[in-house]
Amino acid sequence: MGPGFLPLILGLVLIGLSGSLILRSVASNGQAGIVLLCRKIKEGVESRRFLIIAGWTAIYVALIGTIPFLLINFIYFFGIFLYLKVGRLLEVLLLSIGASLLVGLITPWIFDMPLP
Image (spheres, rainbow, N blue to C red):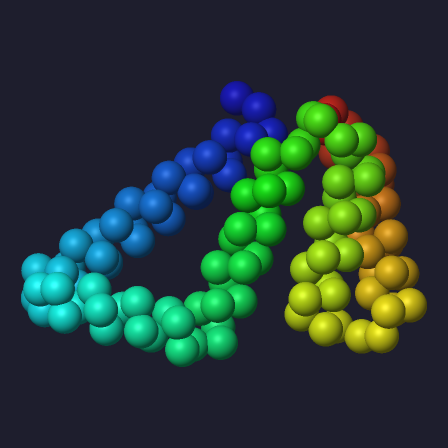
């Protein structure tokens, strides 16, 4: 058991639940259900945000181990905070640095756990 075990389990559960929702939609409405689902995703701001952040997270996970951990954390947080417009550029920069230090240095020190 390692630090990636719980996220793996949660990811598999979310994929399974998403798949069951898609199958239920297709079973109840046929192809019209898929078209309606795609239209809702395309028009919905929340759905679009979710998909963009999920894609950004997938890129982040793929790059862990190839780029130094603190740097990839900073890039990840900076991209998300900038996309969500949490403040002006200086605020986004400071929040990204703080979040990177929290995740990359302080949390492993407190819980005495290794990170990539």
